[in-house]
Image (tube, rainbow, N blue to C red; front, side):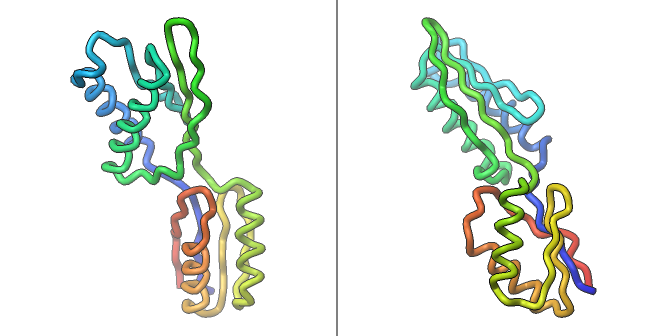
Length: 160
């Protein structure tokens, strides 16, 4: 029976490379000369540190440019609030990976509401869709791409 999986993933090595490139660009930019600013990648979070809050916004723009060049979807980023102290500013960006249960439930509900002859089931951090016809599965992919789910979706393991 034909099936495919709906997942939300990104290549962590590409994120690491983008963070390294962003750090190098901060070191060479004129507007960051003499400023202590840095990016730090720890598991599923990126820590931005600078002296002023407006510098964090510039750093975030640099990071986004580097991620886009490395084909990482920006929907995977969830920027937190910037925290300003007397002489430093920090911001944490969470990297979202995997389809959370609420989003998965909404996807299954949308698939069932479409009246296509397919079954959708939640399996951990992914959703598996099975059906008798490939055309129905491709219609589900089109349906899901048209909606905004708040995270990047990939469709993997398409089997006949």
